[in-house]
Structure formats: C-alpha cells, structure tokens
Length: 114
Length: 109
Image (cartoon, helix red, strand yellow):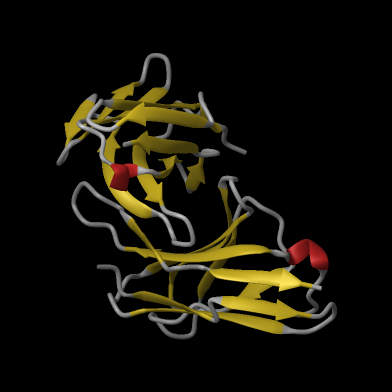
C-alpha cells in the first residue's frame, strides 16, 4: 500500500483564484512528480523533483509552480486558475532501488475551474 | 517529446481467457519500462516493470515482453478476472517518464 496522499480530492473553483494542491508521502522518497491527466487520456508530466530544493518542469507546458522544501511535501500552485486547467492532477513519488524505479501514485485531485 | 502509443484503445475479453495489451515506444535509448493499471477514480498502480537488458519478466498472472528490435512492449494477463477490468498504461523511461494513451480492458463474466 502506497503512503502518498493528495488533498483536496475534488475542487471546484472560480476563474482567477489561486489554488494549491497538496501532495505528501511518508516513504522518504527522494523523487516526486506531478502529472496532469484528462479523462481517458495519457498522463503528462508537468513537474518533478529529485530532492529538496530541486524542481524541474516536465514535458507539458504548465502555468503552475511547485516547491520542495521538505522531502515529504511537494505542493503544486496555480496563481490564477482558468477553465483550461480543469483536469485531474496526480502526484507520484519514487526511489530507485536495485532494478526498479517504481512510481507510487496518489489518488489524484480532480480540479474544475468554472 | 517521446511517443509511447498503445495499439488498441479498448479490449474486451471473456473471464478466464488470457489478455494481451500492446504498446509501441519510439525512443530506442529508453532503458526502463513499466505497466500500470488504473481503476476508475484512482491513481495508477504499478503492475510490473522490465529493464532493457531483459526481454521477458513474469509476475503473478502477468508477463511483460520487450522486443527492442521493433520497440514493442506487451502485457499478458493470464486467466483474466473481472477485477482486472481497468485502463492499462505503459510508460517508458529515458531521461524522464512518458506514458501511453492507455487501453481500457473490460472483462466479460
């Protein structure tokens, strides 16, 4: 059972609001990721971190920002939400072990911007 | 960017039959591949992985086959059960993870 948590699970918010999606893991993993997933579609990497104070943008252009001040915490912030941000956001973590770099996923946050 | 695509978007199988889900990838430098299962309303769950120095790996009821010559990955599920109904994603790792579109597997009782 993966110990990775996301809050809120569901969020409906108006255009222009600032929102922060929370992600925490209790496994001590160095690597953490944020993915965006539309219904029935593939996951797109938007941000990742390989350790404290390390953050990188992923393949999908995103207007969000992330921070990694603590190993266990990797919040995603949208400064001004827009309807185009409506999607599911999945957080994941991993730590390389011999032969495996399995990512553990949280349950996701389903965001609707009206 | 990378291209990781699945051949079929949907697959229906009879309970007890074997399922085969296919995946094509484009980056010959990718050296690590994972199959994930995603049930409705949940995050993806790891099923099985394989490194590029292998061509086959077996788990419990699942087998992953890797053909580096044609850049093809497959997931075989033996004796498919209703609980196997989900969307299955393959992912490749070169310098970062890239996920395919997903195949929706429906198991008919």
